[in-house]
Image (cartoon, rainbow, N blue to C red; front, side, top):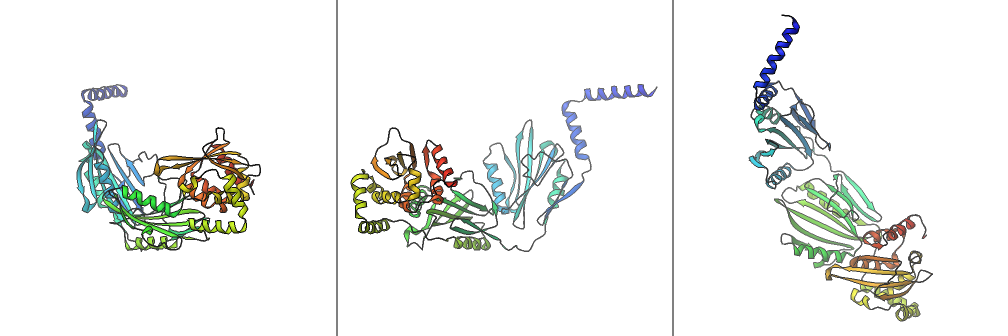
Length: 473
C-alpha cells in the first residue's frame, strides 16, 4: 500500500469518527484537550502589586480600560486597577449584581472580598469568580470567567492566579497639591484623578478631581451666594434621605465666604458634603468636598481641610445688597439729581423692580453710564427680556428701547412684537447681573453669559466673538 492510499484511508477513518461524534461530544473533546494542556504563567506587576496569569492570547479590550485581559476560549482572565478603596469596589460589585436580574450569587464573602456569580450567555452559563485586592492606595479586581462546563476543570487556574497575588507595601507618599486659578478665584487641590461627571452642567463645572473615597468639585454660577444657599437648603429639605448639618444662613457670614454642609446616602454608605461658597469675579464659586464617611481616613480629612481653607478670591468683590444700592442711589441723587429724575419720569415705565427687589433706576443709570454696555446694546434697538422664575412657576417679561448711542430710552412691561433679540435667563441670574451692571466689562460679560439664551441664538455667539476680538474696546 503506497503512501497515497494510506493518507486516503486515514482521511476516511477521521471522517467516520467525526460523523459518529455528536456536536456535544466534539465540544467536550475540544474542552478536555484545552484544559489538559500545560499552562505557562506570567506575572503582572503594578505599583507594588503582582499576580500571575496564564499566557493566553489577548481578549478584546476595545476601550483599553483593562490592565490584563487574556482568553483561551472557554475561560478568560481579567485584571483591572482603580484608585479606590478595596471595600468600595467590592460593595460596588455586589450592588451591580443585585441590580441585574440575570445574575445570581454563588459565593459572597466580604471578609475576603470574594464574589462568584452565574449569568446566562447565549446557550451557556457563565461563571465569574472575582477577588478584589488592595495595595498601596489602589484596588485590583481579578476575575476568572469561564463557561460552567470549563469552570471545574479550571480550578487549578483559579488557585494559581488567586494564590499568587502579593503586595509590596510602599512608603506613604506625600500628598501633592496643585493651584487652580480662574481669574481671581484660587484653590489648592490634591493631585488626584481628573474626571467628567455626565450629570454635571459642563458650563458651570471648572474643576473635578477624585481619589475614590473623596471628591473635590468646583462650580461657578452667575448668582448671589445667599440665593444659592437658599436653593440648596430647599433642595435638601425636599429629599427625605438628605440631612442638613449646618449652614451659614444660621450664623454670621465669615468674610465673603458662605458654607453649607449636608449628608446624603450613596449605595450602602453615607456621603458628607462640605461646601464653601465664595463670591468672586462677580460670580459665586461653589467648592464642594465630598467624602464617604465609612471609608474616610485622617489623611483624607487633612486634605479636605487644606483644600477648603485654601479657597480665596484675590480681588475685592462686594456682594450687592439693597443697602449698598441704596447708598449708591443717595450719592447719585446728591451729585446728579436730574439724572435720576429723568430716568424715573421718562425711561422706567414699570414697577416690576419692586417685585424683584431691585432698583430699576439705578440699573438703567449703571448701564447708561457703562461705555462697554452701550457699545454692545447699540446694535440691538429693540430688546425683549424674559426672566424665568421657576420658584413661582412664571415668566416675567420686559421690553427695552435702545437709542443710537446705546443708552436705554424706554424700560417697559410686555414684549416687542418684532424684537432684534429676545434674551432669556433665570431670574436669579438676572438679579446678579443687574446688581453688578456698573462692573460689567469684556471679561465679566462672558462669565455672565453662561446661563443666558438669545433668540436668534447666533446673537450670543456674535457678541462673545466681538468681545474676544476687541470690537467693544
